[in-house]
Structure formats: C-alpha cells, structure tokens
Length: 137
Image 1 (cartoon, rainbow, N blue to C red):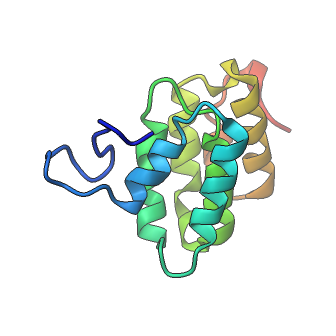
Image 2: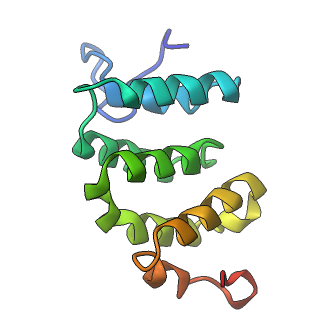
C-alpha cells in the first residue's frame, strides 16, 4: 500500500517520514473499504496518537481529493464524535462538499445527510447553500 507513496498531508520531500495523518489518508485510497474502515477506526481510537488538529488536517486533505473518498463521510462523522472541538468546522466542511456536488454519490450523500441531522443547528449555514431539489428537512 505505501510503497512508492508520497506523503499527502505532511508534504512531498523524499526524505520525509510518513505521518499518522498520511497513513489515514492512504487508508482512504484502499480498495477494500471494509478493511480500510476498520483500520481507520482503530487508528483514531488509539489513545494519544491523533489530536483534533491532526484530524482537522486529515479532513482538509480528504475533502480536497478528487474523487472524494468513499469513506470520507464515515471519517468525518467519526472525527466529529471523537473530537468535539471540530464541531465548529462542520458547516465549513459541509459547505465545501456542497460545492463539489456531493449528492452525485449516493454513499457520500447518505453520510452528508446523517451529518446534517446529527449536528444541527451547527449545520444550518451549510444546508442553506444546498440547491432547492437537495434540501434536507
């Protein structure tokens, strides 16, 4: 998985070590989604390894990826649950995903909708940006 891979989050210098954030991003590129989801969950649940700042860095990288990773919303929901300090950023993340027409991917759209409902009222600013036909009640 990591052979020949360049750090996605920490930079692109050849002598740079792969960080924990890079590892999480690489896991989102795995073809076995079930194994990737389990690995990501275990990694985030390991005490003292990931902070809310690292989680924010990971999410910023993931939401800028093309195409968006299938496990993105699962990871976003996990981060919001595990790192409550990130809740202030949830609307910004969702707004960015709206600009990327997240509703075009049913799996991601389902996670987006769950996030909107689970984190009301913080998600209201993002919901207001949704096109009329994609409004969430």
